[in-house]
Structure formats: structure tokens, C-alpha cells
Amino acid sequence: MGRGVTKLRHQNGSQQHSTTLNFKRRILNPVCVMVVAEAAAAAELSNLGLGKDVMVQILQLPVTYKKAKEQVSKIWETLQPQFTVHVGLASSSKAIILEQCGRNQGYRDADICGLLPEGSVCLRDGPDMIESTINMKAVCKNISVNGIQVLFSRDAGRYVCDYTYYLSLHYGNGCAAFIHVPPLSNLLTANLLGRALQIIIEEMLKQFGKARK
Image 1: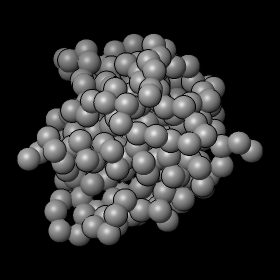
Image 2: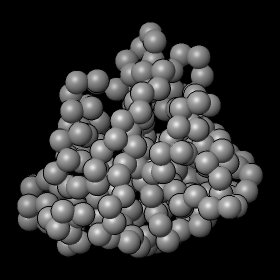
Image 3: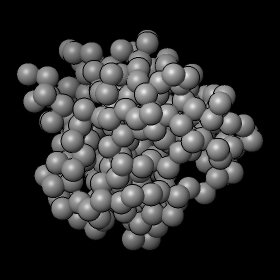
Image 4: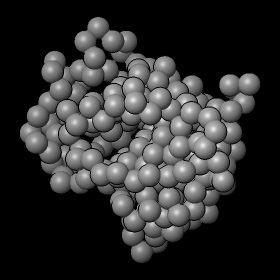
């Protein structure tokens, strides 16, 4: 069962690049999963897949506010997914963290290019917070992941991850999710993390599917 966390701290100034996975349903509109994490874990998830009706595409994206905004807008406008999942690296965490909401204000940490979003906000005149349609606490309760703890959070950290999430929730009318993952290690291998992401995302899609019926 997952537990709550209140604040997530990031190591800024990193040259970390994101990996973007696009999952496209063969029949329905695409389900896109944007992954900001180690490429090895993203590749493992791609290999495992999310069922026979989902295709996976992997892309790379620098972690900057400007690029994040451009990419999120492009995905929702051009791919028109039913649902999008973002997975970001939390370098100081030892657990997987499911983020319930994105925040609009308080972005005071510069990205890897030394830049901030205009006005330190995601969207001028946007709501302070946007919630995911997915109940992250329920996801935590319904899954069992071996070798790593899965927690619940309402604060994604006011950096590029939170910024990306808020924008995706905005463009997708709440049909998005964000998963923070710890870095790979001897104990947390790409195989283990990829399998954990598969279990979590499948549970999210199950909940999303029920809500759409």
C-alpha cells in the first residue's frame, strides 16, 4: 500500500535529458506516455509494452521549461491522446512517487539553460492547481510492486517536472498522470523499474477505462 509524501526536492542544474515514450492504440486514439527518466528504464518499458493494442515510440527531450511547453502542447494538439503519463527522475528519492496534481505558481529554480518560465508560472491566469482524473491513492492501494515502495504525493516539486505535469493536465483536461522515479542502482535495475512502471501504468489505464464507460 502506498503512503503520502508532502514535498519532493530536486537536484537542479543537471544535464539530464528526458526520454519520451509515445504509446499509440491501434484502434482508438493514442495513449502517450512521456518519460523523463533513464533511457534504459524507458527502453525496458518499451520492450515489456502495455498490451497488444498499444505501440511504443521513444524520443529524447532536454529538460527545459521552453522545450517542455512546446513538447506537451505538440503532443496534445497533434497526437490527440486519450491519456498521457509522464515519468520524471527524482534523484534524491528511493521510492516511486505518484503525483496527484500539478501547480501553476512558484517556479523559482532555473532549468539547465539557466532560464525560468515567464512570471514563474505555467499559465498566466491559470488555476493554482489542476488534479489528475486518476485517483493516485487508489492506484497505490491496488498494485503490488516487488523491490520498491510506491508512494502518493500532492507536490511535484515546482521544477520542470511539475511544470510539464500542470501543462499536460491543462491541455488534456485532467487526463494525465506523473510518476517520479528514483535513479537506477545495483538494487533498482532497469528491468525492475521497467516492470514497476508497467504495473503502475496498466492500473492507471484500467481506472481511466472504467471512468470513460
